[in-house]
Amino acid sequence: MLALGVFVLLWGVIAAIANSEAIPSPAAVFREGVVMFSGKIGGNTMWAHAYYSMRRVIIAFLLAAATGLPLGIMMGWNKTFDKVVSPIFELLRPIPPIAWIPIAILWLGIGEGPKIFICYVGAFVIFVLNSYTGMRYTDTQLIDAARTYGASRREQLFHVAIPASLPSVFAGMQNALSMAWMCVLAAELVGAREGVGFIIIQGMNLDNPPMIVVGMITIGIIGILLAVSLRWLERILCPWRRELQ
Image (cartoon, rainbow, N blue to C red; front, top):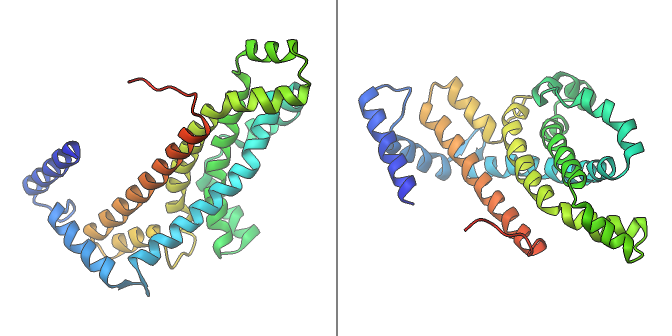
């Protein structure tokens, strides 16, 4: 809280020194936030806009988890599968999510589909990379010990390798969630009439910097709440993981 207070204080000082409408003061942003959360913008309240963005991110995140995790695990576990899939993945991986917007519109129209797809692309790559890395760096002594006690290949995978890779997977989940939030702004450029990205664009079109900042802060707060939820889930599923004190 102290760091947050110092940040707001510095922000206020910089806004006062700049004395420019392009750098709104904390007070101006607070007043705009009160107006936005108590009234309607573009036919929806700010709560509704936050809900639309969060829904897109969560759907994309779950789809990316359902496809990216198994793919990364199989690539890390099976060398033959890795040799077949890696060249295709490496070809697609460097393409930024925003570059997929035109083809997403052609494939899925201008409804919710392309917006979720753009967020999905960003999260999917991180899911694959982290689950792949987690599997490749599984302690080989654990695998050898399981093999010594007669564990089958399937048991080595599900009872040793996957649990050992969970910390890396959860790190990837947090990065994937952050990436999905970054992509939602680009996604809501695709003819969106609701969402926090739409609010930020409206603020730019209306030359209203406080509106833009309120949208940015809303994204940050929702992102923090989702990240905290993931860390709480990680502590439950990975109780053996220790952190530096």
